[in-house]
Amino acid sequence: MKETLKHKDVFNKYYLMGSNRSLSKLRNILVSPEGTQEVPSLKSLKRWSKAFNWQERIEQRDIENSKKLDKKVNDAVVNSKADYRKLIKETVDLYRDKLKEKKIIINRPQDLDTLAKLDLTLMGEATEITEQKGLEELDRKLSLLTIEELKKLSKANADK
Image (tube, rainbow, N blue to C red):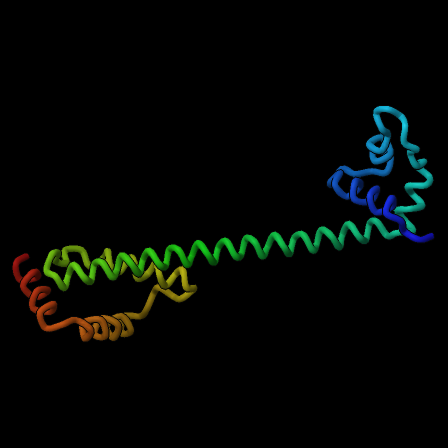
């Protein structure tokens, strides 16, 4: 038997019934309110289901739909992470600029540390480092500061 457009249409209706589908429920759905369309018998529906591998097609379509949904979710997560990372970068840049302009002093270095850890987390990187690595990272960060910034930090800490 060759699958026709009618068979495909009936299969799609069957598929859209979801997890509670059954051929007898399908037959009831196929009954037109006016009674003008010929409704396949339950025996015909069973024969079509077997001949056109409806159960296997349902499983395959569910797998394909699941993959598409996974991709959409993954894309949304990646985009969301990118948005957060952009915001973090903008915040750090603003913080750095205000620091250079001497409009702020560092009272809570934990805030910058929190942003850095959040950024690392969003990138899938480790946020906890050993004490030695922490000191190396601090040295690296301090080496990036200008002499004026270092003096300002030193003065702010001396005033405490």
